[in-house]
Length: 195
Image 1 (spheres, rainbow, N blue to C red):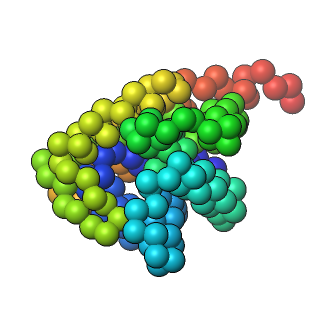
Image 2: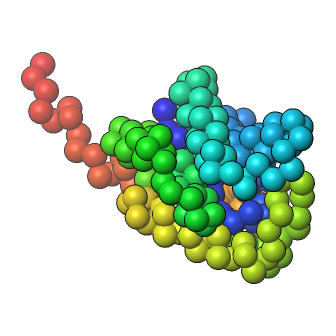
C-alpha cells in the first residue's frame, strides 16, 4: 500500500483536492487536527491548541487512522505526523516523546511515500472555527512545514495555486510518472531466475 501525504499551509485547498481525489475513487484519510479541535470545542474548550497536550491528541488520531484504515493500493492523507512536528515547532511546544517515537516509526518503516504533495497557498486564508490564523502567519506556518519535511528527508512536490480539478490531476499524473520511473529503475528479476 502506498500512502501519499497532502500538506501545506492552512486554507491552501488541501481538503478540496482530497475531495476531488476521493471522487475519482481514491481512498482518503481526513485531517486529524480538525477532528480534535471539533471534539474539544464541543466539550467547551474554545482554543484546544493553546495546551501542549493538543499535539499528542492530534498524533493519537493520526496513528489510529493510519494503522486502522482499510488496505487499498493508494491512500491520500490530509497531513501526517511530520505536520504535527511542524505544528509543535510553530506553536513553540517541545517535541514530545510520543511524537519523536512516531516519527522514528514512520520514517524507519517507510510508512509514507517519500514524495509529499505540498499544496501552495492561494494568496489568502479564510478563518473558520478550527482555523484562526492570519494569512501572514499562515505563510510562516508554510515555511515551518517545509523545514520539517526536509528535516526528515521527504521530497516536496509543489502543487501551485489553481483550479481544484487541475491540482488533483497534477497529483495523479505525478504518481503515474513516479510509478513509470520506478518500473524503469527496478532491475528485471526474470533475467536471473532459472527455469
